Image (cartoon, rainbow, N blue to C red; front, side, top):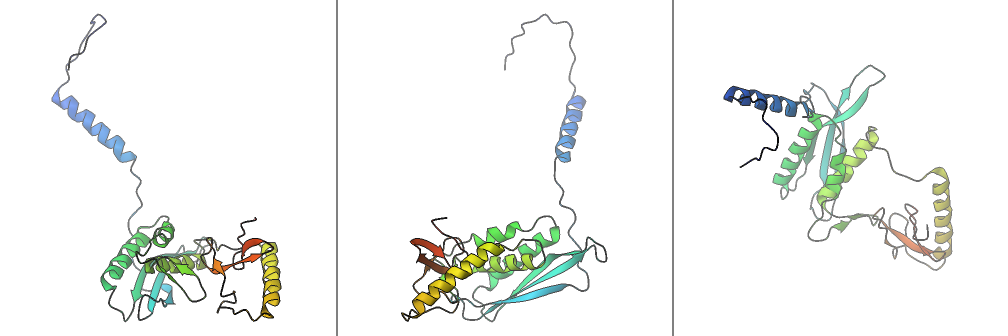
Length: 232
């Protein structure tokens, strides 16, 4: 490559191989300082506390039992809290054995590494089954078995305080309860059937909470479960 010099040369300096090596070391050191270290994986104590959740889906013959064990951080101090440490999934059904073992090992490794692990919830819940998913008892739509595992992880993180439980405020909940009572009283006389969750069997799927609980109320499509309404 040719470089045209526009100014008068007043001095020069030769770059040796040693100078090049020093420059490369300095650049590498600068790059290393920008690396975010998550810390060493947590060591496993002799005793852990945890919860076991049972899920029964139409895509598996037997129920799945999901156990999430927690480690207690800063025990005995005002900053004491629990965070997930490991996860196990057990079932009589061996059809999904390989990928379930792989999934639980990766999740446990993420838990032990520390940092924010709540991202796992959205990652798991966004997995869709090619066959189109299924409906749980009560009319809630689940896109895949992996997504249902994600819902269990979300429930657990809410219970230990790592995630905030979604829900309506007191005023909104009271309004929904009133509207639901009015609707049920009005349609009970006509003999309209209800599902196991107390919603009309002809209700549509709510796009917000994925539950078959949306009905036409006061001219608007309104969800009797979460209060979502196209009319605001």
